Image 1 (tube, rainbow, N blue to C red):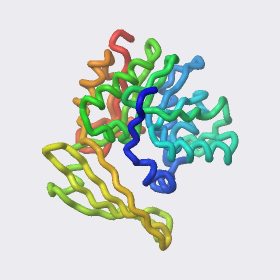
Image 2 (spheres, rainbow, N blue to C red; image 1 turned 60 degrees about the vertical axis):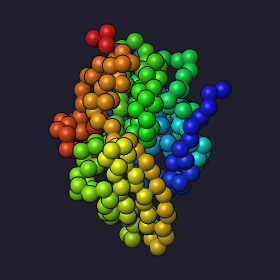
Image 3 (cartoon, one colour; image 1 turned 120 degrees about the vertical axis):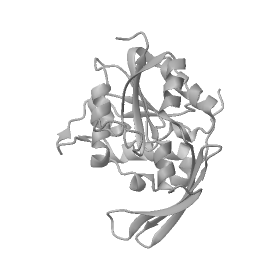
Length: 271
């Protein structure tokens, strides 16, 4: 069995991740766009870095079963508990309507996205919410993209969403260290973040204090500031070509200043 490298993200964030990054209407646009990119015809779907299933669970109701891979047992435990508690999951679409359940939900798999493999081919593979950037070595990032490409069915689609380095640098206002507070709509709830950027190593270190109605939690995360050109190079090396790039799930063009970049790739020989 291949070793699974768990960076410990789930141990810190699992029990409040879904409050930091809500599902439901907050991911409706993401789910709709991924569903639009799915080839249909019963093709399988794979999420690398499935976490608590905030994207995979509603997506499964639109495109059918999703295989969700994650290196965190804690995050997968939350996903499993959610499915057990909620039963059939429906997807909230952008217009507020609810899509009926059309298939089984998510199959949680403990695995390492750098070299995860199975015997299946997938019409849609996606890795979102900056997961690729949690690999701090460019060679490991390239390995992960290759592993994802290897799972694609002929003509399949790979979608990668990760942080924009230019935005992170702007957020720090040109300083190596900065702090900022993000309020949440729930009363007495917000996130205080202490941001450190190592420009030479291109490492972004965020330490957080999560305040929630009189209680607080501390967690930290590391990301590699990964440019769109780098992701394109990984994809090209894996035999893929860039089809489109946007700054958000609504399809807004990426100009280089937005927080995230979303890239869509297909096999180079696909039409």
